[in-house]
Length: 156
Image (cartoon, rainbow, N blue to C red; front, side):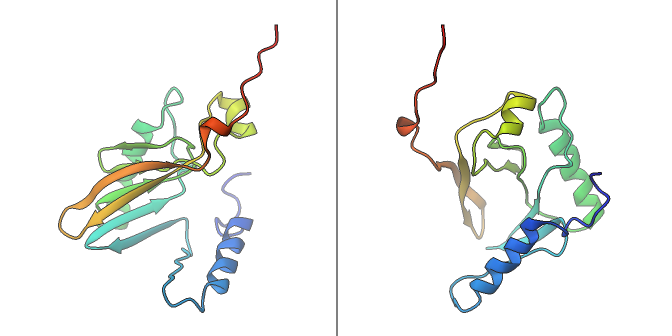
């Protein structure tokens, strides 16, 4: 059942540790692997709390209310003020308040398409940080060229 095992007891964590080991000799690359299900990092005077987001509850399949509640709770729980709350898992890119939900590498998956009827193009959020102003711009980077996708088949 979900929650019975340690969050680090999974293949993702092993892959992250493998990548960390493989990149150790590159002086210009820093790999940060959290030893827990969350991480707070500071870059250019801006703090980011990063979580997977799988435990954020949706309301009517919309995660925004749950994300705002989660962000407020994490601020109190960690007793660390952070400027932005970065969330994965929901496979939908969004930005609201100080919350950034990343896209997904895969787009629609069997689970998201069948169970939730949700999917989209594979994207990742890219943003710029200024040391005095925090995030100054952001955009989604498409990981696939939509013009090269096969057309949707319609059977009549």
